[in-house]
Length: 160
Image 1 (cartoon, rainbow, N blue to C red):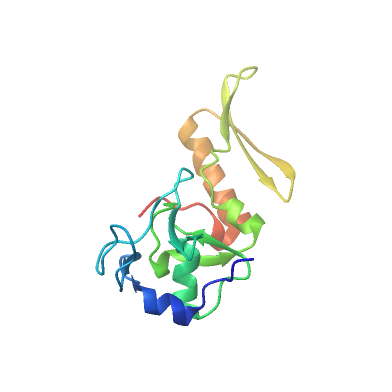
Image 2: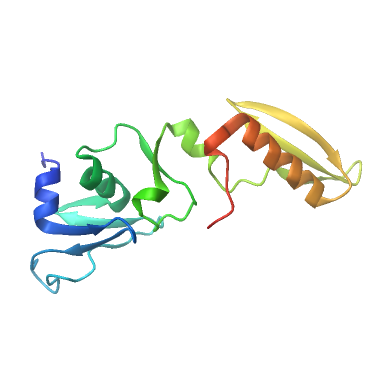
């Protein structure tokens, strides 16, 4: 079993810039990595990760550990939905459900029978019909209002 990295060990190995969200190596790591090089890489799922002691760690979780001293107990939500933006100001603790609210799901579709645009939202597994509208813009506006009502601070935001 591999041990998790501690805040102390993390700070010995890496420098985290909380304003940019970028990790750089504090020390030379075998192979090509030198002190001062940007650590990690982007994974196929769009998140950045760093390998420490043969174990890959998602950088947003390392950022949380670096600043707060412990790994997050829940998920970490990227507020602006940009998976590589690991600035501490862009990260917040979230439950699985709260994290799912901050997704890019549209919640607007064309209703063929009426020829109008419908807005809808899923809340706690329940489909809520928000109405039919003449334009996609009207439907999207209503959908955004429902996101604020039901999801609060976890509602989708336009990317900063």
